[in-house]
Length: 247
Image (cartoon, rainbow, N blue to C red; front, side, top):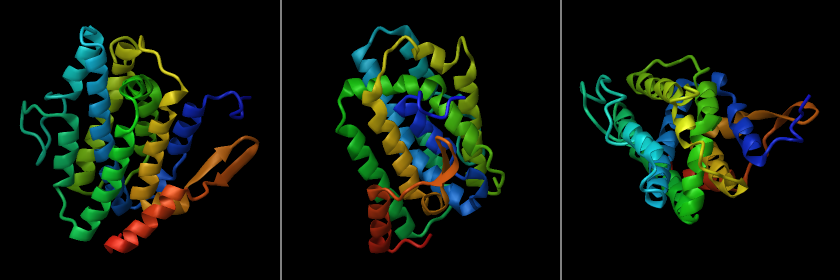
């Protein structure tokens, strides 16, 4: 049985994220997850844009772009998208967050964490960001979305819209022949994209204090092990205290 020794580093990070205690989160915790995913969705659109610039004649990438950007495939949704309304998927997430009122300090904290995450991704080479698209679309994000969807307390308009977003993306990615993974599988990637997955993991740990305090994951030969607090997570706690956010 594979205990993790033969897995690629990227797969191990995806495993870490999937092993987060999604079912034990509160509704308020899941709202923090939605905030984190909003910033990831911006990064995803930007990485797709890099792929399109590098491969402008790639018909498969054009199709992915048509289903992620300026699209109505998440419409309609109450309070977020009208019937047939077209928008980028990160705009859907921005409007989803607008379904709930937040204390200014909480918004400031999430904005600071998210902008720092985006700045780190912008420092990577365009070729690396473009290549990450394959690992996202060809199973990586689908696994993460299915793990998040094990959460059960979708008890607000914001959370129900977020669940709709996740569920639809599982559908977009899971078709083995016409799904988004199949459309970009011809592009090559390697472990140079690892910082993007690590950045996503750390974004979640920073934005969702409950994950940083409760997260457990399997390790080789041991049923479970506490995830050590990362330097970024420690920095996030200091940032939260400075801004004065009340989670």
